[in-house]
Image 1 (spheres, rainbow, N blue to C red):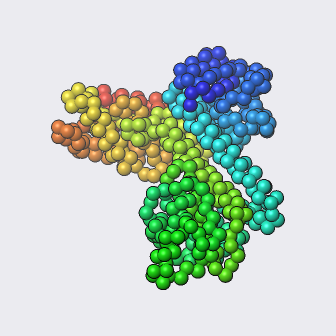
Image 2: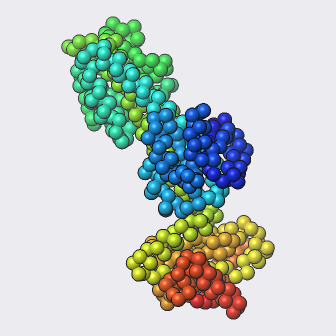
Image 3: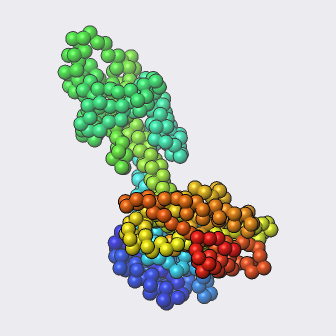
Length: 490
């Protein structure tokens, strides 16, 4: 997303310089502000595509500044990424409820920063396009309502299909409501693309059992024409339509009686191109013919409904993208366990809970003995496979409340809430024996390994904080290594 304008508000010159450099290197236009007043001046000059806002600045509370921006119609739609050295648990509750788009913790990782900025810019532009499309649809609605009082029914229809519904449900509601609004005997949604020989009935107002029924499009020249041209097709009189001249000869030869008087076909295509088709509206021979006014009304409803379906799909894609980024930020890419940052966040939360409820908590620090020999003798790819298998072994052995993290290199951490030291040592012994008795797969046969494990628990006379817990577990691991490896120390 080059050329997007990013505004950075931070009072630390070094942070401003590093953020600006990373963003400019990725092709963004960058401007900076060192406090609230300069931020407001920059916003007055030009509205940025995205704002990076420091939580704490001299004389200004970033949370209050965020609230001020989101209450001003000029800037409420700017995506704001909050930047702070505080933990996400402390900040997300405060800022996300006020409209912050994301949270980035100092010190930041350049790749993660760029990924989050790009994701928010994509989301903002897509949502802006969707808003524009919805505004256009609303304009068309107003014009249709002004043309005829009876068209007020469209408001109820659109209200019903703009909720969080699946596309199949929206098709079904539309077919029913459009049929009733226009006094139609038959209204269907046919899924097909230009050039298709067969269409699929997604829903039919007159016969709900026809869902997923196949129709051969060579029997429906009006549908083929709408798909090929992308334009609506109105056939006021089926028995005199030039479009149906050949098919009428077949009907006559077969003695087929077609009780349809007139037809409207309205093509549609969703934004991703994966789904397209037509709304197929018909009136019987004993009913009034469909008119161009009916086409305008139905076309307005269909276009607005398609915008609603696209919006629903966009929101689903946005949720999936945010979930993917969240997993990426907290997961070690090799082993799919927690990374060191996520471990610290979870451990702080668990220790707070243990302190609050007078509970116990234990940690295992696991280090693979002589792992360098595996990399040196069989290569780093084999070493990576072994690390993945160790991670799987640990993850499969723990309870649902426990968690496993890769601490670095060949070192893992297992956190055991509600587990006292004696229980943690017994579990560590089981893990040590299981690792020693497992033959890890490689291209050159089984790889045998042992592990040294240090165990520490909270609360003890030496452990009061997360840092204390890490320090005692690390000391115990050091003793296990010094005493000959392949053992558990506490």
